[in-house]
Amino acid sequence: MPTHPARADDPTLTALLDRFSQADACWFSSMRPDGRPHMAPIWHVVRAGHIFVVTRRRSVRSANIRACPAVSLALADTSNALIIEGDARPAPEHRAELQPQFLAKYHWDIAADLDYDDVIEVVPRKVIAWGSHGEGRWLLEVP
Picture (cartoon, rainbow, N blue to C red):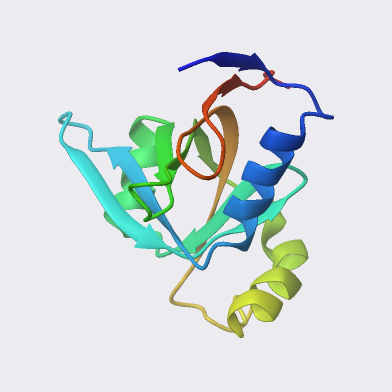
């Protein structure tokens, strides 16, 4: 599988990130403190090249990213894979600015849903794809 430079004008990388942004949900994989993996689907939005999810602070996912920030996110289509690896962190400061995106995409008002009290930001580090989306690996620059 070829490794491509991550250029802002790369049409395949741009299309992959757009495809991920438009997907209904993704599989979010994180690692428990004892090393066991955890994977579950979740809704997401993309803002300024970063991926955001909203979950419960008491969730396994939330605890995991506080112990180990390395995560993988993937779309469900195994024949046309799109996987993003990155670093996750709690990002409560983005809640208000993300509210319109979650409302538009999912008809979900995260400002009014107090049960889902944890915003997580994922900074992508690598994009991996094969199948109809394109093929290759793109290593993204660390800001």
